[in-house]
Image (cartoon, rainbow, N blue to C red):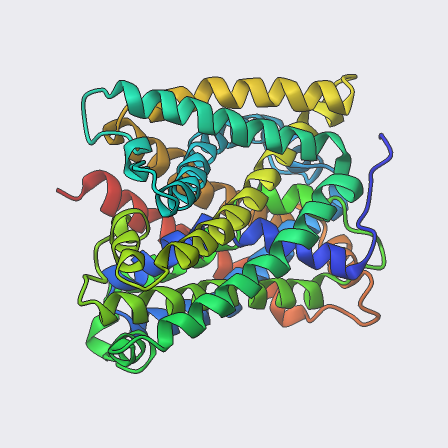
Length: 440
């Protein structure tokens, strides 16, 4: 086994882990899910799901990575899952496909940020020009996406070549404090807008039990899995970088709280501003790329706040993207003789090539997202938890869970992971199939 880097400090560990979880899922997906499923009830149930489902599942994925010393390619096989070698290969392919469309989305965010600056100084750029058409083909959109996606991939490559401590840790320690600082500034501006109180009441002060339908609960559970970057990929490879002194339970709780806080703060930025100007909170995925820019345009010096928002959104998304790339890079370096630098640029090329199909239009992009993002992520999370608590010997698993904490791991929590967590993740997956595949 090759020597493996470990995190240089607890602070670095937390910045990297929170960075991996706080991506588009928190600052983009969470607000529009809140809008779609009716506000306060969804927020409360989602917060509950993070603690009782998300954090224990996160512990399981870290334990799988720490126990095996491998990422997706190798962890399932060494963990004893039947057919684990092929499961790892399948999830490795899924991550390549998911990283491609996700990186493309980050390019959109970067272009929106650039557009705010250009328009503020007299330009006439239309940031929405980068978005794929609903159907058909648009040459301008494709060229812009190729340029921006290529730039994001190159930036990721330069970070990844430097490794865990000199690359991933440093960029995480820069972007995570910056993100939370930007969110605080934007919240202050949003809640001081006339009429913003209606948005705050709708967001956290209007609990209606009837709004908590089966679909809403399943969506909240799925969001907990999605926002914590579970899926047998990101957190497994980062778990393999844990030192023996790093306590899994405590760090998982802090990571979960940081992830949850980012989503909740993003809601305090978006909904007070949207309500202040009478716009629609339930506008779906367009909330960030269509509705919110209209909101910023109505605020004095709104371009400054729009730029801050898209810079923060880019930073959050970029760190998650780095985690996705690291799954792939570690897979190559763990299982071949290639140097890290060669592995990085090989993976960058593969991701860029596979990013092209989802650029064509949303009829390609949306199914790509549903299959390689939401659907396969749920499957990967289920397999990771099952491998950790059903395939690894119980005494060994408990030992790894407890490592660094100085006290035994709670046995009831182990059984919770063994029985409840797989059933809940299976429920999320079944609901996803019914809603995304069979629903008319």
